[in-house]
Image: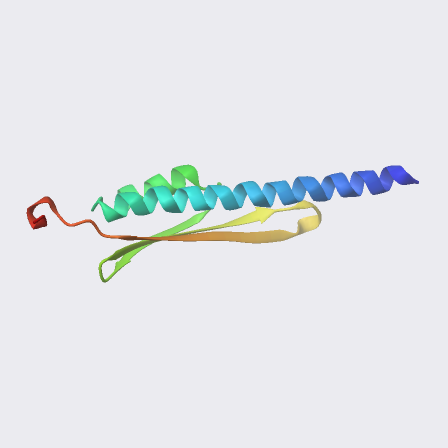
Length: 103
């Protein structure tokens, strides 16, 4: 009688851990990529860096707004029973001035 309950709880713990790991990877990917973007790296390098850290199949977008670099990473985590949870992270950093612009 108790074994099905234990299996159910264990399955829920594993699912929550999967979502947590995916969220942390999205945060790490967005942070690493926005640092590159703030330094003035190309958009391709920024997206490539984020995609290398993010969960498989994650969508990465990078851009700038005013004097800020913005990177967003979104991923879907597939869970048992066909459920799906979306996780995302957004990182923003001030764009660093070019070397000729320093006082």
